[in-house]
Amino acid sequence: MRVHQLPETLINQIAAGEVIERPASVVKELVENAIDAGASRIEIATAAGGKALIRVIDDGLGMDAEDLALAIRRHCTSKIDQRLDDICTLGFRGEALPSIGSVARLTIRSRPKDTPHANEVSLAGGVPAPLKPAAANQGTTVEVRDLFFATPARLKFLKSDRAETAAITETVRRIAMAFPSVRFTLSGPDRSTLELPATGEDRLARIAQVLGKEFAVNTIELDAAREDVGLAGHIGLPTWNKANSLSQYAFVNGRPVQDKQILSAIRAAYSDTLPRGRYPVAVLWITIDPALVDVNVHPAKSDVRFRDPGLVRGLIVGAIRQALISGGDSASPSASAGLAQAFKSPESVQTDSAGGGMFHRDRFGATPAGSTTAGWRPATSPSRPLDGFGPGFSEPSQPEISEAAAPSARMGDTDIDPTAVEHPLGAARTQIHENYIVAQTRDGLVIVDQHAAHERLVFERFKTALKSGKVASQILLLPEIIDLPEDDCDRLAERAEDLAGLGLVLERFGPGAIAVRETPAMLGETDIAGLVRDLADEIAEWDSSSALRDRLEAVASTMACHGSVRSGRRLVPEEMNALLREMERTPGSGQCNHGRPTYIELKLEDIEKLFSRR
Image (cartoon, rainbow, N blue to C red; front, side, top):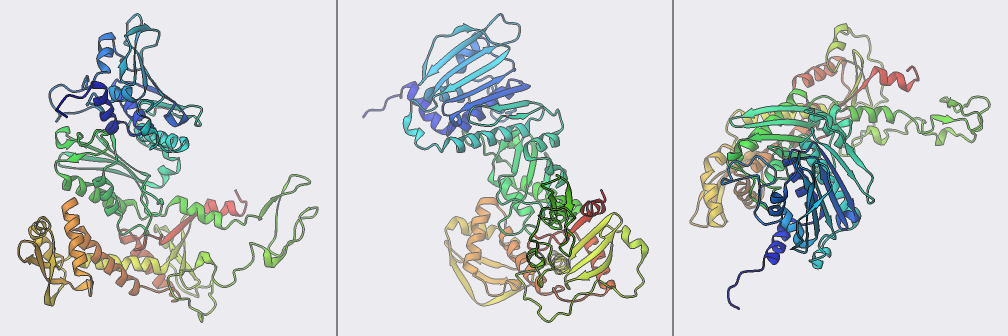
């Protein structure tokens, strides 16, 4: 076959394969166009998960007949002129509308301000219909019907209507968080209506609309800058975490992105504060000179490439860690609410079926006169005394202490400083189950896990020692030779000095091999080849050597666990108060090395609610 030019329709369908992956991609492109047009109100309607219908209505600037005729042609746009290094809009390629029209039935009605009527243009499978007058308000209405009818094979790769509906909802939520001054409405027969009123410049109010009201009380505000990069947003307390990374949102110059570099930086910032398999909550806004970031990496525009990725990563990691040091040691209000709920028995408050009144069981099983409830037994009561240590007061990862004496709630005759309750963690009043310190604060009480808290304190001392100088290394009797691709060897050789500061001494051993002569003494016996290969991969992707540092901190974490106060050890009041004061001075003391909370606070008003005093 001789070289020939493809038909315009086929070119658009090929482009649609990159730009339009699923109905959510259509919604993203159309909503971004509406925002670029200056819309203050955007209404989205879908049917059958967006496969049957997607309608987007905005009150933006609109297009006249000439612009409307060009809008459905490839590479026609009003958003850039000659340069790609100064992109300040969400869209700029001029591919979305013709790509959609090549695989679906597309209709666009638009009316600029102060024009007598609107105009309408249609595309069906890439074939345009003549432009004609239409009736419409100011702004633009875009309807997409029968998505992928012109390319039926693509329909086989779509998920169920429910899954596609959920993807569209998530897309709108992400864009809505980036633009709180715009009102969004998402409706249709395939969903419940989602309304997000405009909040002006109040980003936190918009985030609360999307992620829930508990977001505000469980997060810390960020505001940092370094050179030409600014960072703002909110990050979750380490004790308020999720089972996946779907609650991490990043915006670069207002553009929602799902960039691996940013997600990796968030993960690194929380590296020693979260349990394994848990993910932090974060909403970050990055502002940067458009010339220093490339948004033209992929047609979907969800990935970006920074000119100085190390600067951006360092800013994110440093700002988050500083914020966690400053305000991340507080107990999560959600955890406190869970504690209060744990004290409530599911049968402690019942409704009298005869009179509709409320009554409480007493601890001996008696019920108020006239109650219709019977058959209560102490052995089956959820309020019965615990048989030993219940699951809520145990550490499965540590050996059970079977011969510990029965715990006592009395502290003995000791002089207690009456002003100690003014400290953030208050004054120690007792120790229960030889592991939990109960402290009184000015307006509530705090329960501290003594082992988890002291483990964190010891771990922070290890980290300080690591930062104080060169890590001690151990000379290998025989150097270990590791075969690697030449590119990886070059990268490792370039970072040899940095790696030596972490206790790993290596050098080139021919064009395709690395000789390791010393390893960090703290690592002991380890898989040297695996470690070096992981380092090579990490340096190739992120240009960092954090993997080795993470290994060292993991060793320090294990050492801290064995060197801390164990469960089952009785502490005198002076020791308990000393532990509380050191926690107040130590950054990150709100979580242990494994990400579990070290203490939970219960306010006095919550305690009074448990006893119906409020």
